[in-house]
Image (cartoon, rainbow, N blue to C red; front, side):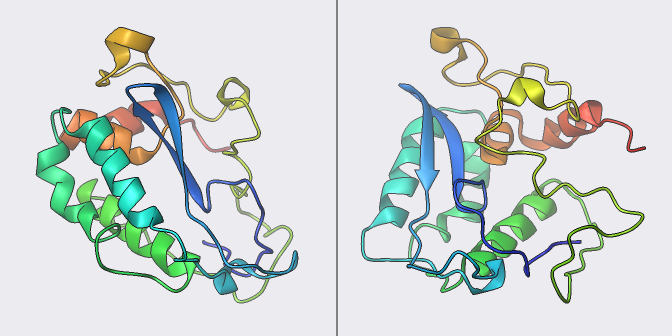
Length: 186
């Protein structure tokens, strides 16, 4: 279940991702139009005043061009950075999620909340599980294990990156990697 009714939270992965480039970690942040603190996630608009799409794509190419699977998946992601502009952040994120799920060969049933609910009985609330404000070592849900990364020889394994890092480096093995990390839901 995806909550598009919640108020947009600043400094979350809803509008940013972290990749591994030649200088270490690099944040890719989607600029947003001004909005009030209580604007629902479904109404957050993307700003296109600056050429962020072009900058993000060049960063992805620079970081992953030499990875084993970048060329294999390049056409799947290029449209998000070259040409197509999404008005709403939620639409952008959902379209990107759809591509990632398809590449991972996952077909989850996705539903959306009708209104904001602080807690939903009988569900595990993952809305704030992963946060750039919280060190990944505090995440007890996943037990990370290294996988080969392009710049690993220079910096060592860098955890807590965008799913794109895993896809570009592990390709079809990305799903097996994720399944091995799963923590039993209680």
